[in-house]
Image 1: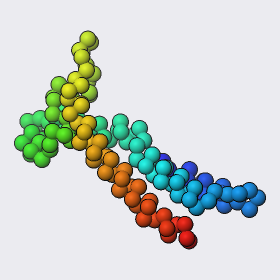
Image 2 (image 1 turned 180 degrees about the horizontal axis):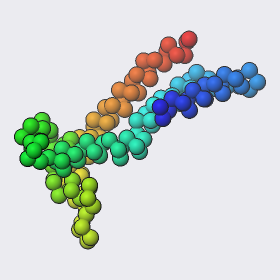
Image 3 (image 1 turned 180 degrees about the vertical axis):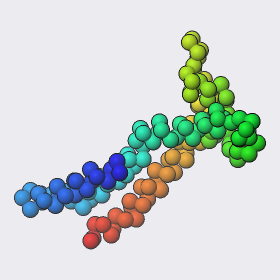
Image 4 (image 1 turned 60 degrees about the vertical axis):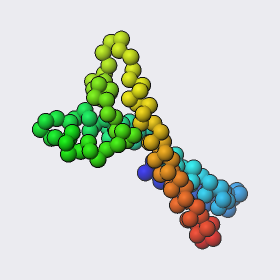
Length: 138
């Protein structure tokens, strides 16, 4: 929705004013659409609300009652979730005054997630490419 409503407004604006002024071409609309689709995936709400929670929750909320350390952790790799309990506690509760930031725990996640999210963005761009011809001709 972050991109859909502004893009529909742009299409309506382009349609209404194209008879008076030179409107945007199909190629320009496709460029705007592809850039917008990729940018919509990178919005801050998703990163701070969901992604960081997914990365940190399995270790922080693990307890003897839910047995996540036995039932859930065997299915995770070190590249996709935080494995340092102190770093996860620092994320949710804040670091003690004067404590250094646990860069090692967070940097270990970076390469795997960059590759995964890069593949998602590439797939999104490929969908735009597949739909381009149909959109331009009709």
